[in-house]
Length: 201
Image (tube, rainbow, N blue to C red; front, side, top):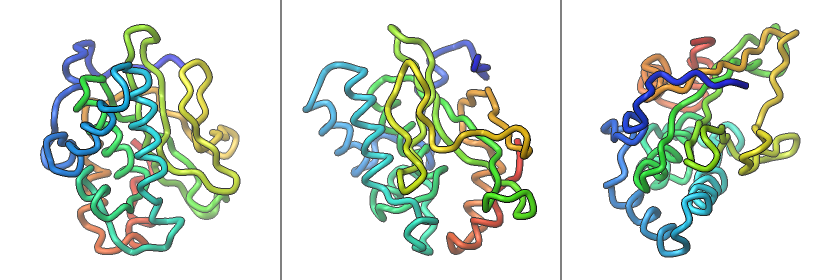
């Protein structure tokens, strides 16, 4: 897929967006320092950050945990979050290491059937000078879902079925969608958020 950038200025994908995308908060900063202590290689740093967001923060819809986390710091503190929070975490970790990162979305079936309706799914696009832009999905794996760190061939959480009305949006946004943040902020519990997620861009 040819990705469509919101901005051609790479620096726009390195900024903090308080309070959601921040890399100077205690837990995020500690993770960044740990990653940097492991390797100086940007690709390896990106892989470690991806694995932290994918594996150390459990997906709230999988665990049935009612907590709603929005910011990167909250996701690390609670070790819980849905796809959007995990994408916020990955962006914060990578931007904090000077690795440009944007926000991407897909329209997927809410419960696997057309009758169940649609909801946005959040993931990231990452830029490395030697590869250009590529997408990563830190959603978290379980039976039937296997997202991996891959630069050449995308290994995302969900195969998009266009015949069922699902959409793989090519946009790479500088900031999380306002409609996504609004849905998260207005949901007291994660099961409310399951139904309040926007259906499309």
